[in-house]
Amino acid sequence: MSFLPDKDIQRLLENSDAESIISDLENDYVGNEDDGNEETIENIQDFINVSGAEVEVQDHVQDNEEEVERHAPVLEDQEEDVVMGELPTRNRPISRRRATRQRAAAPQTDNWNFEVRELQRVFFTGHLIQTKQSEIFEASTSIFSIFRSIINDVVIKLMVEQTNIYGQRLKYKATLPHSRIKRWCDVDEQEMLKFIGVLLLTGLISFPTIESYWKKDVLYQHTLLHHIDMSYNRFNLLLRCWHFADNQVTDITADRIYKIRPLLDLVMRNERNIYTPGEVLVVDESMVHFRGRLHFRQYIPSKTHKYGVKIYKLCTAEGYTLGYQIYHGESRQCHGLDTSGSIVIQLAEEFLDQGRLIVTDNYYTSIPLAEFLKSRNTDLLGTVNKKRRGLPKDVIQASLKVGEIAVQQKNNITLLKWHDKRDVTMLSTCHGKDMALSSGRNPRLKPRMVLDYNTGKKGIDVADQLASYNSPIRKTVIWYKKVAADLLSISIVNSLIIYNEFHPLKKEKLSILSAYEQIIKSLLVVSETVLMPSSSGPSHFSGSLQRALGSSPTVSGQSGPSRPSGALGSDQHFLIDLPKISGKRSNRKRCTGCYKRLLDEGNSTAVARKRAKKVYQQCKQCKKGFCFMCFEIYHK
Image (cartoon, rainbow, N blue to C red; front, side):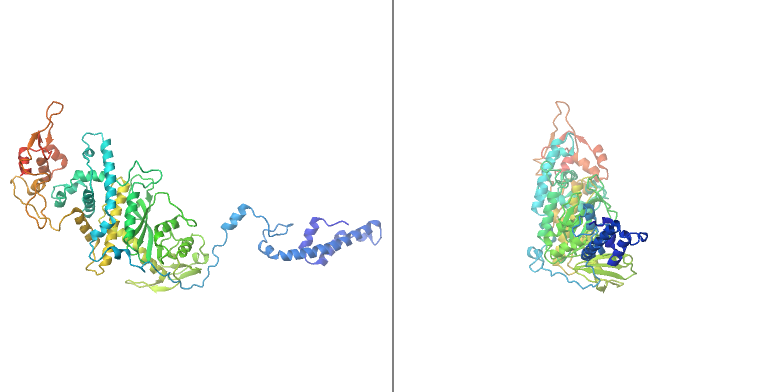
């Protein structure tokens, strides 16, 4: 018995009517009408073949009808993929490329629905026990004490040790005989505090150059700087050698910010150890202005300072800075999150699992971050980029008029699009589509999600604004010194926030200017009033010159002029001849009194050096050159 070829079976499977199948077979295999009914051997053989095929076809069609019914759902879904001549099967192999395409195109917008319910905040447990600031401080604590708990003795000791190491190294490498670094001597903790006070003072009082702060010119003369026992040369030396890490110990390739890392870790650890934040935290980036050469210098056109070092900050709604991470081109990435989401987790890791709300902008906000924070008992609120994966197209592509909203919800995540002057897309794990009136001069109906975002997001702006006032950051090519100055400003802002928290009344609160003033006075150890010294002395010297030469500030409770440091009496201070150079003529020095008098008259340092007397004698105790007249005035 012969069977039908494969092509005929394919055609038979396309037809579901058995009668049409048999009729087609008869037309194909029965002899022509011209042959008649002659019973020849050939006709009998053809009849047998056709009859046998009919029985086989009926059995085969019945079996395949069951097979087709079993695979019917697969045929409906894969209508375009079925190739003629092949029956679809459940174990059909899929190529790697096709599998990747299917995964990428997998519907991530499933389960989004328009039935939106109001979501509730996670219960906040961060203040169930006493806050750190309440345990450490009290209402009578001064703002300087709070500042010193941040910039504590450990921080000052780090600055002193590393500054001395770097200063001695520069002194050893100096080749010029009259270089300023040759006069380097080690700094102690008290002098370092005084240096920080002068540095903060340069931000409070702005002069065109650092040298101007020590000028005797009537335009620049500042009495305080002439009575704190720190000269311009000494301040410049300390500023040049100000260091926070040992260059020879640290592996440069392991950490690009190793020069500031020890100071940054100590300061931020102290910031967190003395303060317990509230319910709302905000993450955003800030900039420390810098235009020098730096591998990780950034350009952000939306910032006030477009070029500089980018800082990721974690702040409270009041502006207290809790996290400070420098972008340096390398970052750790958490499993399942992108780079921006990992930054949020790294900054806020210590404050998760306590029912807080983290506010972010569209650079950080994503569905994976929201799901991760929700699993850590933390809510997320922020604007979201409409190009993020997994967002429903019904909301993203909705065309809205002013005041209209489009909103969908998935599990505990709400996506809302609101049209104000432009489209605003937001994502939250603790909001629905509730609307509320905004506060201000012209109240408007806005989504509560938008109002809460504006309230929380201002924390980072308040922190940056307060830190920008009276900032001690000055123009320099050393990037880490600018970051260190920024950390000092942040420490003052945080001290102010803690102080004002204990003084809620408006008349008791301090402004940022008052905070700087009190801290600088405490660092420089000056009183509220500096009395003018006695004007006694030769008439040909001005009072300012006499103050520079022979008197110091009189603190309240004390009286009388004081002698300069080291002046113990004329019997111990006397002039001696300068030693000769290699047996030749004696060396000459510039008269200290004449030099200061010329500066007092408004001359520049270059003119004063040129016109001051050159003398062959010096004071044995002071080691300074004097002419006879100036020696008497100075030691009187």
